[in-house]
Image (tube, rainbow, N blue to C red; front, side, top):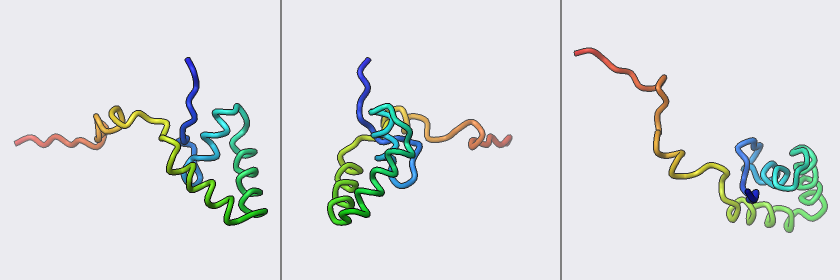
Length: 81
């Protein structure tokens, strides 16, 4: 099975750095530091790259599966009539 580049649910802002870290196989903290250094060294480029990746990268969860059951069993309350 091939691994796809997706945003991670282990996120601080939008999951881009953690998703990239999972794809490459490194610690998410290192990827976050690389993105932070990119933004600090060249703010317009770093912010634009991060925003583009946040828009282009799909989320890691299946949208159909995520919306198929919007409530958990704990959230459903059945009242006797």
